[in-house]
Length: 104
Image (cartoon, rainbow, N blue to C red; front, side, top):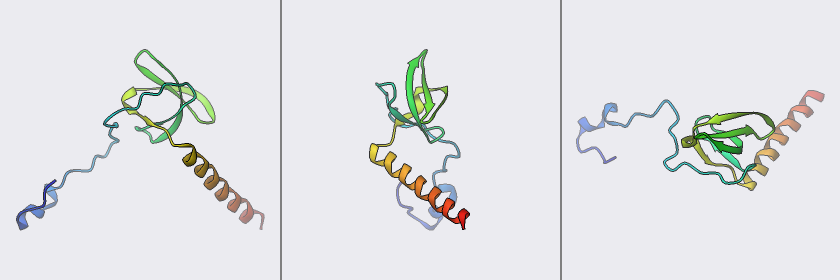
């Protein structure tokens, strides 16, 4: 996007619209190993890659559950080990704070 050249160019109509729906990644990720963490870019959820079959990628939640079929264009790399550890630690600290507060 270029800078506006006149006062008329500053209208909101000149700005690119913000999409109201998720946009698939420009270069979808292709997982290779079952058990690999990936991100479903359509929902933003981290999932475990199970298999690719019939043009669909099959994912399951990190804690198990039913597999769901996803269009491969929505797959992006999963979080790194550091990100996973930080999420678990942060969730645990929030849970600990709630438990401590509820016990008072």
